[in-house]
Every structure is written in C-alpha cells, then in structure tokens.
Image 1 (cartoon, rainbow, N blue to C red):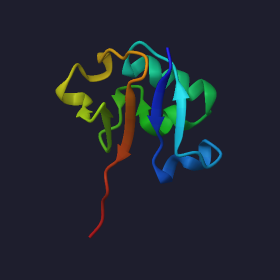
Image 2: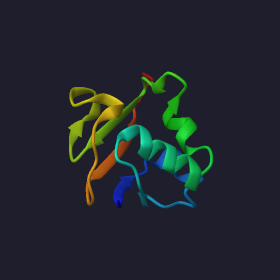
Image 3: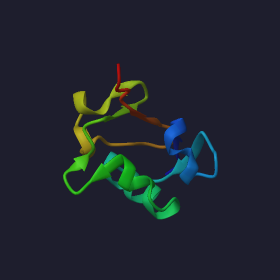
Image 4: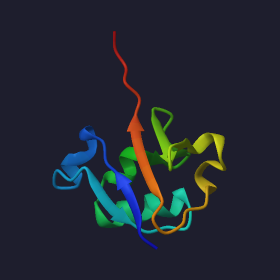
Length: 90
C-alpha cells in the first residue's frame, strides 16, 4: 500500500530534505510506525506513547484526522497524508 506523505520543513532533516515520501500502513498509526522504520526519529517527532502529539495536525486527503477516526483512520493506496506542526509564538 503506497501512501504519499507530505513532510513539513521542520521534519525534513530526517528525510534527507525530501518534502514528500512514500510509506505504508492501513491506518494512521501503522503509517507512523512505517515512517519511524524508514526514517528513524520521524515517528517520534509526530507521536509519543499517548499517540499523535497535540501540536501536530494530521490531514488525510485534506480532512483532519481527529475529525475522522483519529489514529485508526483507515488508509488506502494513493491517499495523501500531511503532518503539519502547529505554529506557536507571538
């Protein structure tokens, strides 16, 4: 199962500078595990033991994961997933 994953600029140091990568997983949780396997440290920036970090928004084909089925959101071939860290500051 090939999922196209958008990697935001702050995480690209772990993907060799790539802004888009491919990964596999039947759910968001599995996708994050595959990303961690392929790009060590990336999964840890996206999630911790409690799940996706609160400051990271996850979009599946343009829809926010938390409005779908959360980390159990099913994925299919050719889906597009984006991990977007929230901007903070003032």
